[in-house]
Picture 1 (tube, one colour):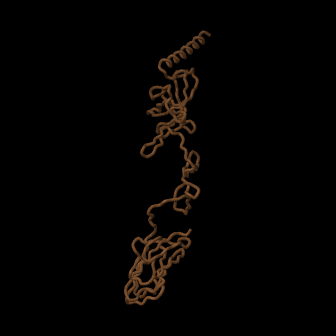
Picture 2 (cartoon, rainbow, N blue to C red; picture 1 turned 90 degrees about the vertical axis):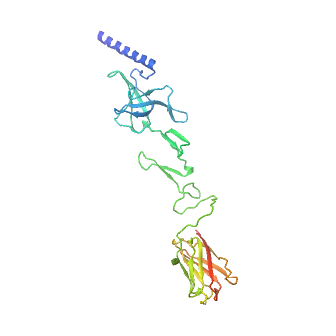
Length: 309
């Protein structure tokens, strides 16, 4: 019985000594063997798996920051250990750190954490490319669906962020599919797109004369351009000659709208009209008159094409 009483007395003395250490050095070495957990920022590890840490708390904005009590650990003083032997190599991470006082073997304070989902929070820094603004220790990213973002989970522990395609009712991205937009859009000096027309894409009728020639002006394509027809004085043109253009980039789907006119040319006599008809794959210019027979003359057809649907 005397031996037991002596042992109890020594344990009580050890507990008091531990409490005195805490009071003197400000370290968390008290607790009477009871476990406690708190959030800590894990910042580094040595070759023996001893981690440096700093106690954390949440601000009113929901971000981690250093706790005012100043509790820290280093690999040589109150280190933290990963409970499952997992090595962490990317820092900082935020973990639920458990403190316990081992009065059975080493009589030392022990700190441990689990590198597993649910017990760790890896804060990241979110910033614009020029580093302004910059937000550290971020643990949640919020994507506003009103800006066209879509969040999904393709597999466990994964999240995918997509941007919706823009439409008449939805903000989003412009893609290669057919799209309908709403709201006024102002475009300055639009450049007509498409593959350049070649001579093989144009045909003129015999009514221009047997020796008539034509050229496709540089920069012409399916949307706009100029076709230049030149008659020969040796020929005898006939009425209502035509120019047919086969669209270089294939079908428009439905017949597009088109406008055509003649460039000013003082060699053309009379007030002669021109007309254009379209199909989904071709357009034809009609010259409602008879080309000049006695002199070589150029007829420059300027056109503009837009989709009808």
